[in-house]
Figure 1 (cartoon, rainbow, N blue to C red):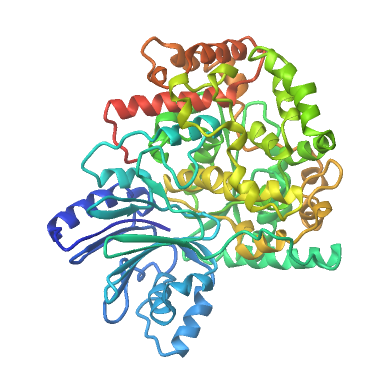
Figure 2 (cartoon, rainbow, N blue to C red):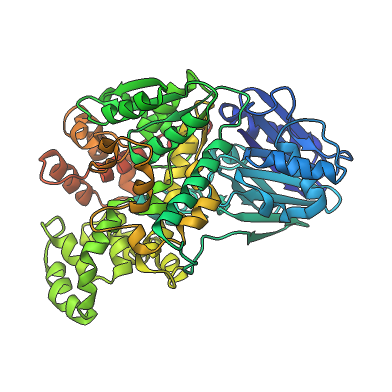
Length: 623
């Protein structure tokens, strides 16, 4: 696991300037790679790398090159099938100077060009320089587990593993992208390919960006299936196939030359990963959990730890731990409003005291239908049998007459909407000031209408059964831009590598073939995955209400964090330039009075306030 940065420019740039710039950018990534640094500076390209040593501790230095020096690569991630690829390359006559997975990339490129991406199983982002073609390739893994940011102007393409490092390579302070800001206010994250800054982009998952002669071209090499595939012949055959895929994915991710453990929340996904990892580990597996005062999740994690004899470690958090807010803001480089970043930060910090690699259970909810919103959609699907015009008159018209904050107004709006729009209304915050939303009236034109936020994603998945369409939308948006971003930044800020076996692309493709009633049965989500988990986990872990991995921010904001919330209403608050303050004041009042729970939105606004303040005072964009 590493971080990298670089520049591809024209021949007029001096090598001294290129080296100074890439070193400055790479210095922002020390936390991603504290063990080793490396650089290459050519006539038109500069590459910098920070390495966290995981495989082949003595070798594996980057930038890695082929025998002639015509191909060089800097890389972040793990290629889990690198050993089989290496054996094949050796048979073809390639000579290796290390045992690292990185070197596989340069030799595979020699034979197959950038089409090598189709051979890779793993999580990765890399930059590959082809001196003979004078081309630079930027590549990101299929699901977007590893990040990659870039910016192109008239003189150069610059890129980096993190946004803060990319900003550090520029000579001018970037301007805020108002569409990105609107995304953040609506969703709590900025959607790919945008960032919070104008002109600073995120490379989409499963993409290759090729830079040549001052032009860039972006292409996709893989996609989440958008048509129903052939379903397994029976539930039993599906269980056997899934068991084999999960077992292979977990065992592949146990390969490391450093101590390895696993996060254990006590939920189905992380518990199943721990069960399979404990079976494949050479000794007691280290596991790590965080909980909260009065929280009832830790006992479930202990049940799993006891069953598999893991070396279990726990940490209990309190409201004072929210004081790391500024630390979180610097780690993300842009506003990121998911409060579950707090426990993710601390469980990663706890794990790093014992291990360098930790397995995570992320991805199960998206692939196997675990979110409550899928159940809610199924429960209200009957309303779509009522003609849309009638719904608009009977439900939408009364909703338009009710004031913002009135009980029932959001439910009426949702039921009046179509099924696709209902999803957007459920996951996105209202921005229209006329409806009690957040964004100032003069900025409203920058925002995508709330009900249209995911219109393109729904249209792309139009051939899928409806529950699978919802999962498709989450897997291409919420998963990479929220969940995986959170896990990557919060683990890497502690120089910890997090691996996500459930997101092995072979499991993703398998899950896409499941019939709808194997995803959700009645009020049970993740039905097939839970059937498999019955083989491995205590019944108490399987049959209990779902809990998200988040802090009890609702109660804390009404009590211990009361003054923190008050920052939003201060006369000098930075957010006043962007927000409709009477509507913000209403949210604060309703939350403090316990009339409504606005904790998620208020946390989002607090993060924005602190981020804007740090930007104004010139705080470093580096962690």
